[in-house]
Length: 106
Image (cartoon, rainbow, N blue to C red; front, side, top):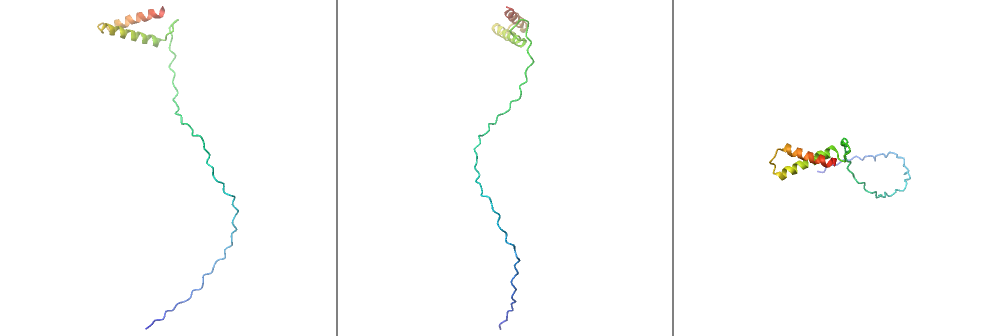
């Protein structure tokens, strides 16, 4: 037995009226030209150097107090080394101080 299929025809969907848009005139696209820019050198900034307080100079001398102290210190060490460090360190210091002061004053 054959059954009868009933189909209903659908009405075609109504199309909405769409206003045609006129395409806007586009400016011709410019090709992007990559300009070569020189690479910037990265320079590390140095911290400002703090200047030490001006070294005091002795009367009519060409040496600062720090330089004189350093000369005495070195002279005392070398004198002690040549003597085998057998004497009192203060004695080496006094001897070196006398020699440096004599040299500076002329």
